[in-house]
Length: 247
Image 1: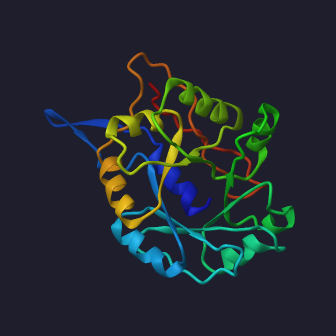
Image 2: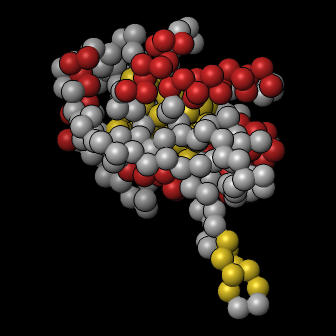
């Protein structure tokens, strides 16, 4: 399992309450979304980690990956062109935990490394059949691009369609000025990774994510579909599911 997948697993875990003495005590509440930030290069990524990013995506722009070393629990990913053979392996060897790729541009031979996480930038015109096919791919998440404007119910339906067919956690760029309630509504459509595009945006989103209420089981006892923990290698067998609360 990649470190990104592990962060997703932790973020999507239901919070449990346990009695202690005469009162109830809750375990330390972990973040319920993963905060990712986009960096121009490996050098600028360090500031994003200091500002609160859980993961940093370095845009390689088709170039060779500069070595990185994860610090303070953050993980590094690379947005790759996918034009060269074994490009994902080169990123893994350079210290990157996962890669983000465009399926319309990346070649299959660039993505042969099994010991790295993968995030696919999903084209908007993917058919239902293509989305269903993604379930069998080794993917940590699906990048659905930027969420622009208000999150309408129609947009929620569209996001639930992607998850319902692919059964993969979703990643989206969000407005750093988003409110706690708006971000919670987005989280409830299986968007697990929120992406920021600047250090200031990271700081704002960090505070908003930390203010989100904990995930909890629905009071009526009914559990709705939730993101599956991504596979670490194509040969993995059993996968663990974690229940989410979706309002």
